[in-house]
Length: 372
Image (cartoon, rainbow, N blue to C red; front, side, top):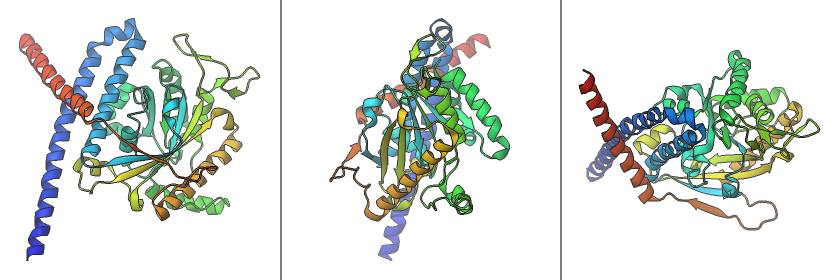
């Protein structure tokens, strides 16, 4: 009987905590997202007069919004440990980031672990499934200039045309530096069986922890955002002009990011919202490739991309067997870094969000009373 009561008490606490977290996050969204939109609406004349300053301010607010999402997990004890290359020193250089995709929690994890990478968060562009457009954060991502891609053969060719047009219009004009995509084209649990059948049919590696990546978006991004060399090939030696006339070097790096969850149990967005899972450490492994090492011909790029995901499979197999990623070649010891967030800063931006929401509520209420 005592055990039953103890179990009931724990369940009651989890349910109460989940309800309180949901209420807070609902209110957080109700004040933060409308405030973001109202500030940018007020700044529209600046967008016409000085668009670079406008997008600089927008990027700062965008980073704050992503920090709020990160804080939801941080408060629940969901933290990140980083492995591999230290990407902080290339935060001001242009890069394409390829990430394995297990669940909706992957995006939240990236929102957290990129917070301490300089200006990356406010100058990055996301490629996400079109379903994310209809979430609470969809409007913010649309304004920021992220791209929502529809999956499936029926949409594939058109989506690449739309992506090319989007990159031409938004990437350089908004001073983007990093572009993040999930080449697998869907969640692991949904694509694994199809990927394994395709691999068996085409004598490709059998993968369990990742799926074979798709080439389309990766190839298009490399061709569009890499600077042309004098010989007509693609590389990174010469600048490429953006819409404002400033010289850009084009993509300098491909950053291969591998996300691993303890016991291969991915966290989803519901876990971040309700916080019902015990404190969990998500592990993120980085490996950087200079753009000169990346082939641009379709066939060679396909082989190169497949090899990256074979390496991801090996990394994840090692992690699930040992609890850590293997040491880099030439190093005996494995070095990991605990990613940290400043709680004072998180409290500041949360307070600013609620204060802004209160201010805009009063402003709009006053305008409504004046007009009606």
